[in-house]
Image 1 (cartoon, helix red, strand yellow):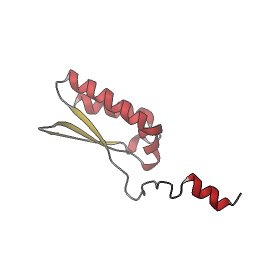
Image 2: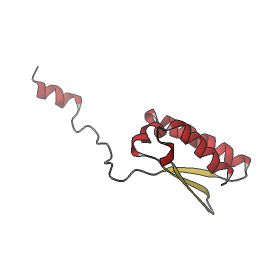
Image 3: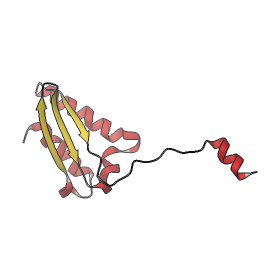
Image 4: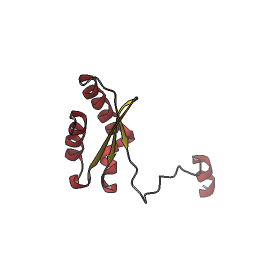
Length: 102
């Protein structure tokens, strides 16, 4: 396993509750290295973090690891199957206040 994949595996397994479900797929093309991460659906929030800050930090660290190895490293976090994306609020605050009839 390459250094970038080893680093990602170490960091992710330390974050999640179910480290056995962590799977990393590494592909190399003309754009650089792509690491595709699969985790347990219950651990997805821990990997992404509040407002995506944890995922952004991991991506930044992977870029640094890639620079040390003269490659461009990108991270793709696979969305678990069967989990619906979150819906945006369908009403504005004004509409909700009007519904309350205060």
